Length: 391
Ligand SMILES: *Cc1c(COP(=O)(O)O)cnc(C)c1O
Picture 1 (tube, rainbow, N blue to C red):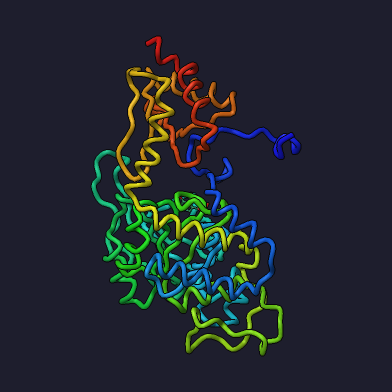
Picture 2 (cartoon, rainbow, N blue to C red):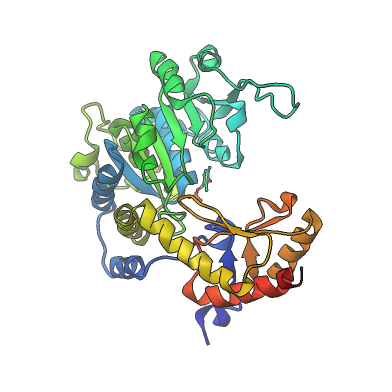
């Protein structure tokens, strides 16, 4: 009996991508082996985070980095770092009693994940009006909108990376830095292209957050917080379990800053988003593999997977594969209602596909979380459920 069978849990075919609610993606055997080896030893966690920092620095060009329990945890920890910086009393106040408790962000950037910044006790001050819904407007937010929202309680700025994000990061960075405020970028799902590992920091961002369990292919519960050494060090101090005599702890050189506190904070906000040694090691190995593979070979590998999923569909009309760093298989159904029915029928067979374009009548197959064993049954199921050959 398989493990999941013995637990009474039915495994699924995940053709929806590395969704958290669908348990993320698949890890390469090298990563699984490294995690198993990591589990067989004990280490001091700050030593392991220092090793992670070296790997993250190499991949991103950041001054420092840590592994968190996900990009959402990186957002919470990054926000806590912007709030408290190196003030231990403020670290103890997060999330309920601090001097700075606001993040400024463009209204058009608001999303489900900015809750993670609120979890650090920060109110989100929205600026700009993305007047596109009305059909009449063309404006979003201006850098000056940010500048006028800054006040004594502002801890930082949140900018959410998307190819279509407005205003430009460099403009937001300029006004924020003029006011002495850090800019944190949520780039959780912006990989590949690998150039994005560096792009936001190069544009002046102080912190950037990536998910480890998405295209990087690391453990589901892993993420990266990278950027300015002092802010990353503050986040680390608010995450580590520091229940030890102060004389026994020193920040590793990877995080050392002249103004770092001598006093050790008590358990900070990050204590509740612990990354284990297995996740940290898994993320380090996954990140190195991800960087080494390169965009074009990864795209070609994923494209080959989709070609095999598509094979049973023959030349059915409405079937196409997109270009791009993560190619997608699209199945255009007759109508949104047909697409929804097909999606439900697949789900009844424990096959999950991307639902983002159902309202256009399109089923999306994302190859990132598919296992080799999924390819043939997925192609057959798509052929049967979608009735493509009969149209
Ligand atoms: C996925 C995602 C997150 C959360 O990442 P986790 O690693 O699952 O915590 C945050 N922000 C955005 C924009 C995302 O797409």
